[in-house]
Length: 369
Image (cartoon, rainbow, N blue to C red; front, side, top):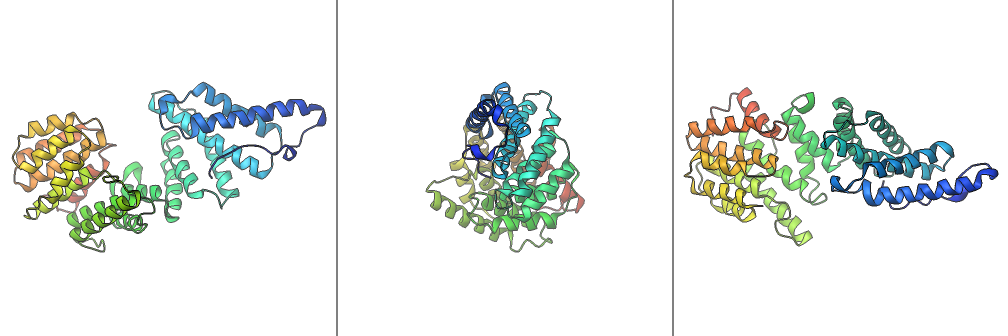
């Protein structure tokens, strides 16, 4: 539900005539509160810019309005959606700053979202389910409820929900059962959305290439080479639509593509050159240049990985270099990199750990490439 305005219709309120002045004051405060939340809380990407005290005061004003007067359904939907999205932002600030999450607020947000989803099926149902899932798993620590929302909105082809189901069915995060075939199905459905969600389909095609490579007995609908070709074609379409080269930031994906060819004994400099060209910072570039040389000291690799600021990228680069060392027959280096991978945040490295573990479970780890 896109919240673009909040001007409650005056005649839509039911209150005693004797208290009309007070009602008008509360109405004005409610509209001012929603304007504040829209501008400074709900859509604010910089959590450091969110003022919890002011945001909570605005949320409380909306709550007072809803508890005091009978609003029209349209206004009630708007108010409850605004309260839920604001509560989510407020408590994610708390979560990420080490403060205690207000679980009562989080439960209220879930109730609000359920109400809006139920009463406004023509609204942004998929987006609200996606948000509800994040509230359930991160703020309430209730993964069963989170996956209930995410599986439902994935079935409605919400790209974020499909990506979560595709990834978590592979990694088994939060107790979700591992199902590689289900993971492949969700990635294929994401890929089939084409350019509708910009880079989502591109990333799923790239992941399907890796899965087809590592698990050749599992049907992905194409060979790993074909999935790489499909990814590249779709990526070109996205870039053409947005008229922006490198929009999807495929540096790590290109580097992994280089390693896949290398593992099959195919010399192909195309992808490593693209990886170096697409590197987002000097540390990525240094590692990719070492990869291109195919001659490196693992201590240098780890040194540059350590300097990468974004930990999920550290995980991705570690796996790339680990596989390259393994395919090179440098098992001492691959073991060092596998051990290094275990020192990184396991939550950020879930896919990398799952790949290694799934290959070991299938008896494929020691047989690759």
